[in-house]
Length: 165
Ligand code: SME
Image 1: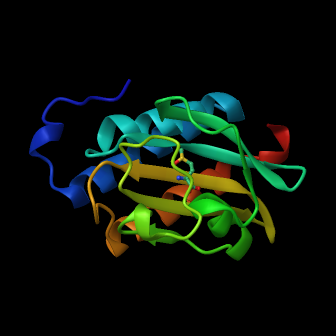
Image 2: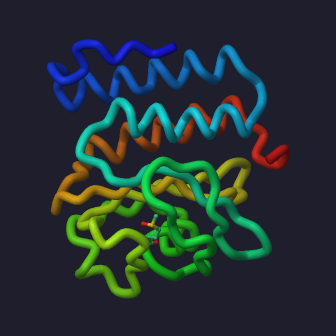
């Protein structure tokens, strides 16, 4: 079990480091992909502050379908190229959106969201889905955070066979 004592005193960078260590602990001790990605979303939500949503969407027949997450119930399906998630999946590029209300086609699942970070999950040249983080704060996500969450997805890719989901 992860320890959250003292987490409120950690800097943003310390939290991101702690998140990667905790993810490694999860992935190296369990091999069920659903258990792993469920806890991956819970680790993000427990360790990273100022979020209102953290979770996964997976490619199914050319659209994104909701996977394990933390936060309020969200849109079940997102078309490729639609919104921030569909853009990340279509372009295979991480999207750091300082103000979602300025993003053309943004899909408002939770009206509390003001900024968003979406990292595509790409393995062996195939897009398997996206990791999506939402914040109620404007400009919540930095480039440093984007790099850490790309490392987070890379670590998932090392351990998870997405075709088994
Ligand atoms: N805002 C996202 C939709 C997913 S929710 O934020 C959970 C988008 O524009 O793709």
